[in-house]
View 1 (tube, one colour):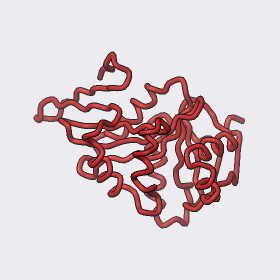
View 2 (cartoon, one colour; view 1 turned 60 degrees about the horizontal axis):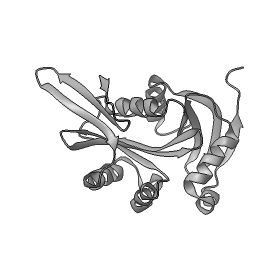
View 3 (cartoon, helix red, strand yellow; view 1 turned 30 degrees about the horizontal axis):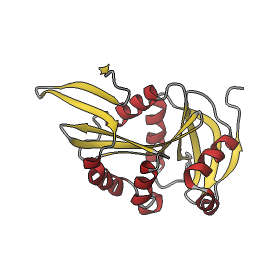
Length: 207
């Protein structure tokens, strides 16, 4: 596994059992990949969790956000949407094609982003573990996945239209106020106000 000289491309050489060697590239989105990314986006997230796709595209075009794409033989395998803000980077979406899940693509994408932004704190939201939730196993599996990939609980819990959420962080700690600032930048003040996002708990987990 080697990192290319260029700062925005990672090439993995992967050997499958009896299937030879294939290459996975992780790089910033190019024009030919937008439709494939949109298809994965629509299949991976319920309507209640999706922004209109043109919002994502416009944010990339304006330089407010970034989309990095993992591909194999020019086939889009997954993507991640990032919003850099000062010394923080918010992971807004991470998705892998349902045709190739369980092949480590999500971990490889996260690993590359952590390398690219090793001088910044990387943040993301997950659903709070709630023993009465209908999707409890999914919530536990999702948190386990991020912990396995080097993220830690920040001790900050948020509440919004999607319910109670926990902030995970890589590369340092974060306060509730800092996350509110990132979310306000990400959504814009009007949409942030409509999201009704607020801090409901904040614990210093280092104590």
